[in-house]
Image 1 (cartoon, rainbow, N blue to C red):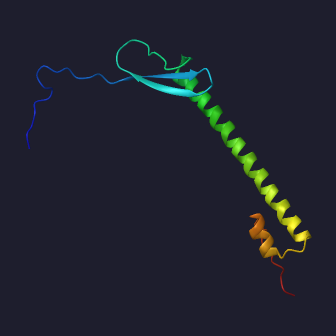
Image 2: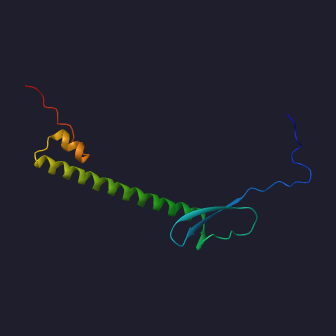
Length: 114
């Protein structure tokens, strides 16, 4: 294997990029890596923020997203249960009503034998 001297003569090492955090006008977040001391030119309207502010906003967005997903799942579960109950009321057998609605009824409680 050919071993080259590090660094190669005539070449300068590229400095590590500096990270900048940004919140765009539409509320989305981003990170930009820039080499050099100049501030980055944003690709669309927004403003630079601190890493701490970025982390705070990201946590808030994640919490809001998780809450919304939970609400949607709960609404879907409620709709499936309502569909299941409606199908049962029409005389559809439980197994078929469950398959048609996507609802899984909780297991019947264990009744101790006397």
